[in-house]
Image (cartoon, rainbow, N blue to C red; front, side, top):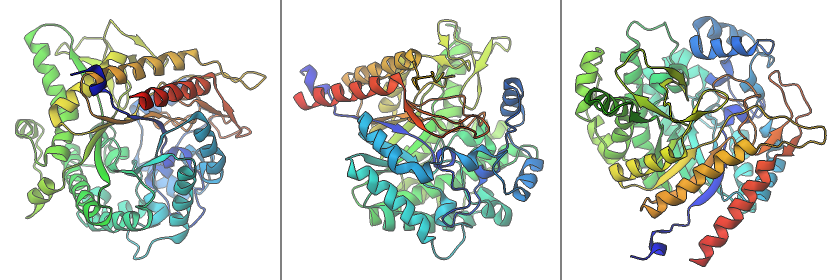
Length: 491
């Protein structure tokens, strides 16, 4: 087989989430979302912000106070970067960089303000139709996430959120409207962002407040069961309402290597993979609960309640592609004294052979190729790398430049590994780098942890001009995409 037979014309793009970008908190008929309740005091020191993020990401007190406070000062996700009002100029810049595909999320509370409404909010539908149409004007494909952590707060207050099976029918109504009203403009659909976040970040993943449940693990996995059913139902409805469109599943990928050659560390790596990653994709892509989870559920005293038809629904509603976020890798060991460092959603065991970002996330481009091969070998489904990037403090110079060589080096090394994975035989659909334009960072809720190739002049308190400026990485990514397209056309 010749080398060219391995080559695929995968798409290079970028990604954001509505809750981190949009703003327009109380505009256009939008209801209150669960992400609208997350609190940050802009006067906090970096140490206080990190302590909040790591040790008390969400509380009952915070929930109650946020419902009373209708302002935006202490709620960065209510402000975002005002993409809601600036999407035309932002998408124009994305077109200038050459984006082939744009991933964003749809806010459920903008379509159904309360979640259980009988009729959708037409202003919300118009916003997404207009925004997606703007993408199409420039030839940019649309990759839409239905749930990126945020659901209408009313569903939590009135029904208990994902704990209640009634949410399945509300979600089905939401998805039906999305397919019927937006389906002609969306190329790829994703029901849930990072579905395994439920275990590592319960408020984000399944809208559970830490410390408020008698058996948190039981509630987390029961909520997840309902999300699995929702995903399967979205696939079924997709076959009927948007035939030919791919509907996928996604995890936050925690790539792990054994810390040593000890058998114990190798076994730990297998189990860490199973419990943190494979379980979620196995249900979504294979359509059943894997056998290895029985022992784990027994250990943590979890008993999933199935109703008649659940097993059949999961089996019939398997996803058409697999996607994941990839930021770092880690090592697995049963040595409790092994040095730790930070990672996406979790603390990880440190790999002494890797460098780290400013936030302690270990930088491992080869791990991306490793992960793509692992996932493709396990499921033989097309893959989208839905998130990848580096958060960093960027300095805007007096002449409005950002010299981010560190970001260029990171992206270049990771995209190089995409090419290698494709040569390995992986069926790669697309790569959408995270935070293509600076947005509010999901973990610390700050603006100063920046991922984008476009700088947004706002600080952690939302102060600034809001103007957009092209970083050095903007021009680098533009050239990389042009080279990628030119190379693809030659084959």
